[in-house]
Length: 118
Image 1: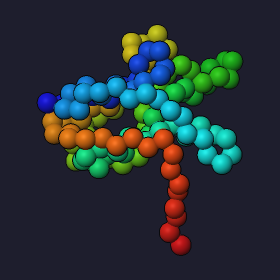
Image 2: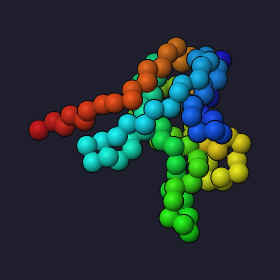
Image 3: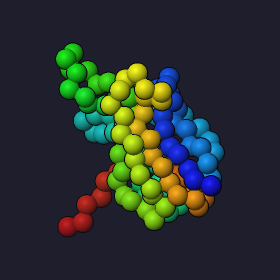
């Protein structure tokens, strides 16, 4: 069975439908400067997604649009595609990530430290 990942319309959860079938409560993660970095989803195929609420669509008011942003940080062997969302009226108001059959688990990180090699 394939797996689909997307944010809910009320802005408080990420849904996974398919091999892994669950809803994950959204928790923002702030860096040392107070910037929201969202959360990370790490999948059994080595795909890593960064999930953020709000998308920069260059709106006239300067605010981020009420759309989930799913950013692929690492592409795993079951990653299929991402459907970007740019419509605040879309249902769901979210980028949508698709995986091929075989995802077995997902880990969620709401806080992390970047370690850089010398």
